[in-house]
Image (tube, rainbow, N blue to C red; front, top):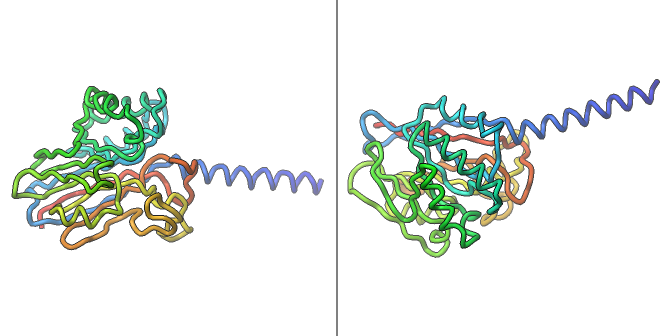
Amino acid sequence: MLWLYITLGCVAFLALIALFVWCSNNLITVTKYKVESGKAPEEGVKIVHLSDLHGKSFGKGNKRLLKKVAAQSPDFIAITGDIIHKYRPRDIAVALSAVESLCKIAPVYYVSGNHEMRSTRYRTFKEQLKEAGATVLDGESIEVCGITVAGVNCAKIKGGGYFSLCGEEGVKLLLAHLPQYIDRYALAGYDLALTGHAHGGQWRIPFTKIGIYSPGQGLFPKYISGVHSCGNMRQVISRGLGNSQCPLRLFNRPEIVVVNIVKS
């Protein structure tokens, strides 16, 4: 009888671990930030920021992700790269289906991540994203909801970057993938940058915001989530939604970021 209790206890313990890991990787959290600016339009702007999907589906057709995004009633949706993990048919199908559905909620503005840039097939994928309804900002800018939204190609950031600006008034928002180049974004004259890539540090030390590792930043990286300032510019970093080389998140749930830009 003792062995039965021990066996049942071990099974229950393993089941709890499995449940915890599943929740850590599949239950999406919504994080909201308010950014005040004297240059913001009177009515304000609400942005849903998504990053690093890596071909992941939250329910059939990404139903759970779409439901949470729609509940925020955004003015537009910003996707800051790594929507695919590899150029596999499944990843492409998941990404394009998600973009097409997101475009039914609000306009979608997209910039590439390092995973998109790893292949010469990016040009084809870029056209597919446009056909799905997204506006791809690849070294370009556009006026949206009274603010300037610009995007930079991930490969160009590493090479020194080309940061396009249009207009001289209003909030200037940059969509970029890599958060560690915050100083470059600030020097280019942006007021706000939305970035991803770091996955929140992938594994986090429990009950802290300390992440273990990020590509490009190494161990215990600084720029993994939240709001960071550089001069007059603020950068909001998404912890992302999917996983990359490391298949699991720990103490670091997938994240939708909502940024409210309001008049100060």
